Image (tube, rainbow, N blue to C red; front, side, top):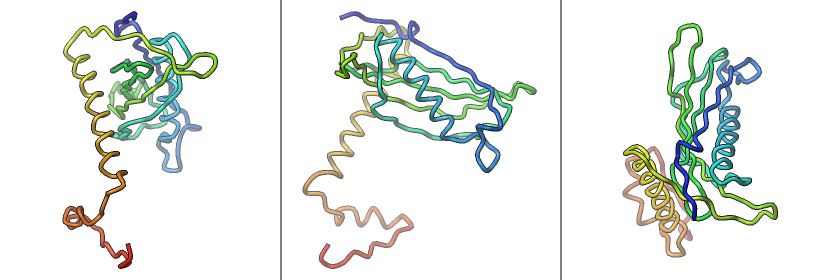
Length: 183
């Protein structure tokens, strides 16, 4: 197996936000930002794997700050984790008011990408060479996100799931449970 340094496949793109990218509230549309994020995730994963990649899942898309028309949006992507055929691409989105120089962190997200061959079969990806504490932390956080997702799926998708085990947990939320007796 070959290995690559994270720095060798790190990508950054910048784009000026235009009125055509805005929503009805006059801010840049979240869907447009997600589209750009998917593009940079593809580019980063393809650069690492040296093959075509597809998006398998997206985790933690939190829009922290709005992006304005006229802002320069910069996205930075790097491989945070590799499995056998998959990679987790971490993406940081920042917007800069080019008149004032003010920079805002707008979003961080994690795209799981899978490497494919020309026939659409999943193919093995290179391993990672980790060079600093931040890269180790990102790799470990990706493992924890995967474990949490798996545990949540097992807990709530199991055959023996019963909502009655969670009724006390629901009391602190703005919800009223009124299920039919036969449920």
